[in-house]
Image 1 (cartoon, chains in turn brown, purple):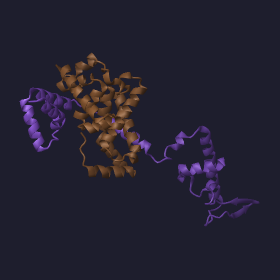
Image 2 (cartoon, one colour; image 1 turned 60 degrees about the vertical axis):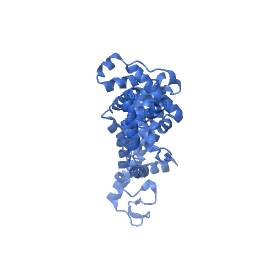
Image 3 (spheres, one colour; image 1 turned 45 degrees about the horizontal axis):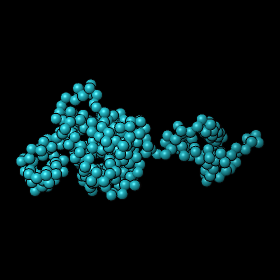
Image 4 (cartoon, chains in turn cyan, green; image 1 turned 60 degrees about the horizontal axis):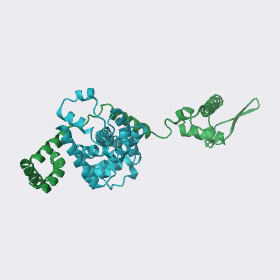
Length: 181
Length: 160
């Protein structure tokens, strides 16, 4: 989770908007881990997730003037991350990541056996199970629990209603409980 | 324990796991969890999911910072590399002309103050003009001090 105080963040954003390279770099260091985890969770592919994370940071920093502060900067950034991952997923022709809408009822691939063998701890096992959830459920669970977003923020990041974010979260957790038994 | 309580508590479990609840909210949620098997199981799952963060590749930050640094570099810094070969050849010709003129000026006399084009001397009937600061093609700065923007201005002048 990225910890910051609103005033501190606002000053950092002002400096970055004014062209301060140190401020831009601070924003990258502060938010890149969250951005990467979201793109990784959405794409299920480390290499593509890195590309999407880079696209996200470059797009966001190039469009800071367009950040109006309606949502928190982090939520705005994660929204861009979701878009970047979806765009890369489309380009890769990976149908399961192409569209959150299309993928709503489509389960993700089963984990590769060799990959699963390496996931020895319980948390890693849960992470592997998470990858088997339909995309919307997986993202709602990940954004809510791993990124600490509220339902309203999850809805903003995913471009859906708050009710849909809540439903997908609970369906995802329920499905995870079933898978883990 | 009714379903409404469980729904409300399960909505709060991620916040409880992250330590983000206010005192009274935390107390009531924790109290419910202690007495409810379903919510206790779900809290255990939430805690596991919270721990299951993907590791961030070590080199990613450096890669992104380098990309951003490149994208925000001053406009002209790398623009020469993007010039087509014909344009580069023209730039080379201009550069040679400027250097050649500079050497002649050094050989036969200095620049006149005020930047006016003047005839400093006659050499066997050949007038040698010095450099004028008013003409972008004849910039008074030494060639090695010309910026890419200035070179581009020279080329624009040639194009016209």
